[in-house]
Length: 150
Image (tube, rainbow, N blue to C red; front, side, top):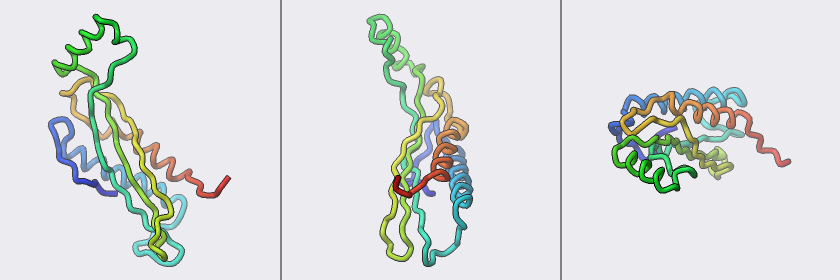
């Protein structure tokens, strides 16, 4: 796994967190893949090449909830947005593909978005823990993936 494009740290998402997310993702995916098939350093016959990227680490203001369409609640929600006290959603975006080593043709492509734990406001720093469950779920799905038609 790599970052593509390379992310830029922000006040909310530090370089240390970006590095931690990448390391945690690589560890979990390698463990998941190794539980299914032997991992090799160089591709050979009857092997696939995995290419994957974390394409975005995002924290964005939570959208309006159904109860915030009432006029007074809408004013409160607008004030929260303006003052930076609005809850922030966290998300992680992945892309990956398995390529047949012999033919160099793509066998499987995956695009995935996972939502992590909310941050209380825009001043709260993102941590690896906020997105661990997203990565754990992706690794579990990779381990459980069954390409056989049903």
